[in-house]
Amino acid sequence: MPSPADLPDRPEGLLDVVLLGATGLVGRATAAYLAGAAPPGTRVGLAGRSRDRLHAVRDGLPDAAASWPLLVVDVGDDEALSRLVARTRVVATTVGPYARHGLPLVVACARSRTDYVDLTGETLFVRRSIDAAHGAAVRSGARIVHAAGFDSVPSDLAVLLLAERARADGAGTLTRTVLVAGPMRGGIGGGTYESLREQLDAARRDPRARAVLRDPYALSPDRRSEPPDPRGRPVVDRLGGAWTAPFPMAPFNSRVVRRSNALLGFAYGRGLDYSEALRVAEGPAGPPLAAATALGLGALGLLLAAPATRRVVDRALPAPGEGPSLHDGRPGHFRTTTRTVTTEGARYAAVVGGPYDPGYAATARMLAQSALCLALDRDELPDRAGVLTPATALGGRLADRLRAAGLTLSVAPA
Image (tube, rainbow, N blue to C red; front, side, top):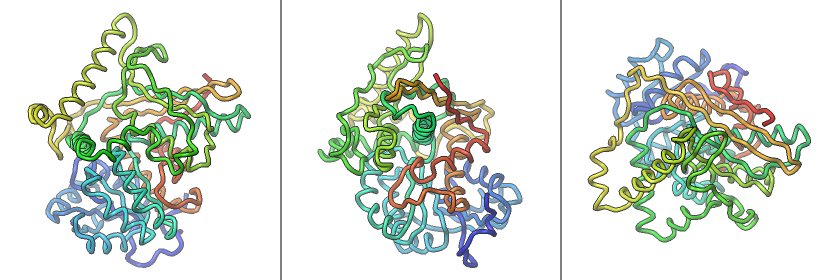
């Protein structure tokens, strides 16, 4: 791995990574991780709206972060965003909901050839980003990388690794491919619910937004070349020895995986049929627990979609900026298992997991390592630009980094 000092074209004062949103829950976790993981000499800046809060974050970090510059910026100020992206190779942002706050930064990065990485799980935002910035990013050479957290790194890298293993074994391309999420333990912050609310509101107001959310290939660069609509999964099913229910992240993750496949010229296979499910329980209790989980998730969606009932639900959910403490000692963990059958009949399973809360500690590692990968591993990355995915922008290099960061990413015959 090159050290920061080895990088060419590194003008004095140019930062390697700016973390925007460093004072939020995930932003603080990412800053803390970067302080220990960034190689000596890496130039990191912390950005946000409040200098006092930025100072407080930096003061709580290890000594390695003592000299990190603090950049005060409002994401609603286009001139401030232009100055920010001109100062750095990579912007990593945790400022959401992205549909409300994210597009001006994406456009600024695309125009200035500054690489960008975020944590979005918002289909409508990524579609808007593609429409507004893909062409400019291709022309400038910028890599715009969405979904570099638990949404959707485990899904995206697992399918990439499966396809590469099948190709190396001469086993053909992927067909039916199913990710099962779980077991896992972790918290969900208010920002996640706020992003869901934004999408539900947009779908209620705008028929075009509803059409995007209903299209399983909504993020494809070539919708007409896609295969027929995927079959999806039964609401309750038995997979991998456990009963499953719908996985709330599946609608977004699956679109990211399908975009990766299309951007790679359908290298995973034109017959790829990808879906996801949530592992609930084994044994006799499995079916009723899976059914209850499915009903509960469906009810939550309906309650949040209706303005009259949302006010009641909102009282029970964390507000933006609220969530589990980063220091409460809870032992978070996660595991996803993705199984596939190839065109030659070979079966493989990819496991992605780690002993970290998926929404915080694991996501902080994924975002930070994605940013460092863009900043420090440029010569080892695929020669691509535009609005990309973790698999198409960072590929196996990110998988290597995440393994070194304590995560499991493995593929074996199943």
